[in-house]
Length: 247
Image 1 (cartoon, rainbow, N blue to C red):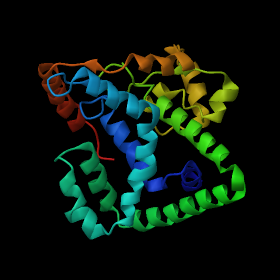
Image 2 (image 1 turned 90 degrees about the horizontal axis):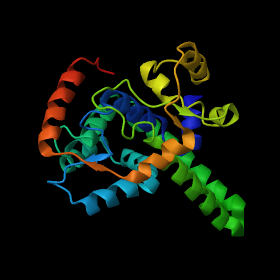
Image 3 (image 1 turned 180 degrees about the vertical axis):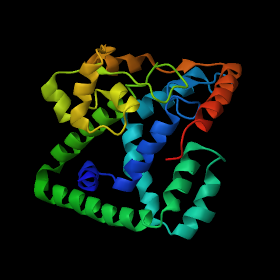
């Protein structure tokens, strides 16, 4: 079922699974803070451009096209592609972990075949009305990109188990598989999606933000963090990661 849902989403299951596991491992560590930048390395304008691009469309583009590297041979991925990413970078770690299991590449290629077929059939069925499909896909891409990191924007750092919970009417929460209970999910990642509201209520917790307020908060943009502060956070990140089991 998970693989079928991933294909309908438009991304291979193993790619989404890998990204999800890495997110839980590095959440709010120095390797995954999209809302911060070092002013010594980036100007405020460049940092804002990068942040807003990722916020409005970049995340979806990454999820849509990054899995295409699975079309390359295993040898190419190991010997050439890995050279383009810095050592210990998020991307390099993702590729190396992906290649550890031999079945990941063939499974991903099969998923891509179904995904390409799904898009082809969609455009074929829309016929001359294909612009409508493009608009719907763009709206979907916008929602996915904007909502993805909203549960972590401005949250406390170096706590991989923390995320915000957003208030949303039950009918809409079900539509996104209770993703708005993101804080509960991070603390209990193995819980089924339909149990998240029950656990949240049993703990007597409060929602940090309304769902739409939570999304809108990101419009404040990235905040500058000094190099000294980043170095301190890298040290705390390494200490934090050493305590986590390998996934």
